[in-house]
Length: 115
Image (cartoon, rainbow, N blue to C red; front, top):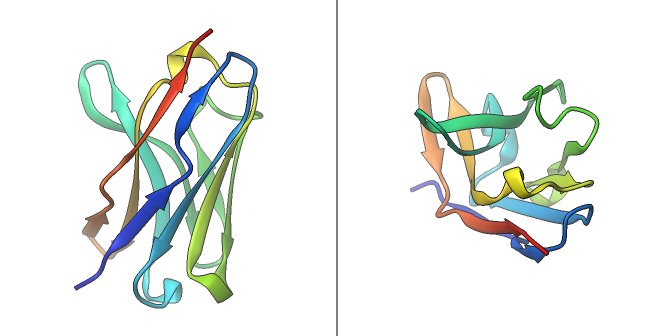
């Protein structure tokens, strides 16, 4: 069974930075893409950023220029570097890995941006 283990959440002041990690239990190349999602008003979850097997990235407009998604294939790990954090970035961040139309979700990691 595929598992995703997230880490790196925490409490940070506005303007601060955090780096989230998502480690997959199988070879990361098995997935079409891996990404991060968070709850949003009116939605269960919204896309924050994804990276595919060719390392093509996709970002929500609200995080462009502030967040960077990357991957370490040797460690089967995807990272989300979050800079210039804002209070509205607060929430539980979920890692998701996709094979065709099937998603596997992590347990989530809490990010709180507050002074």
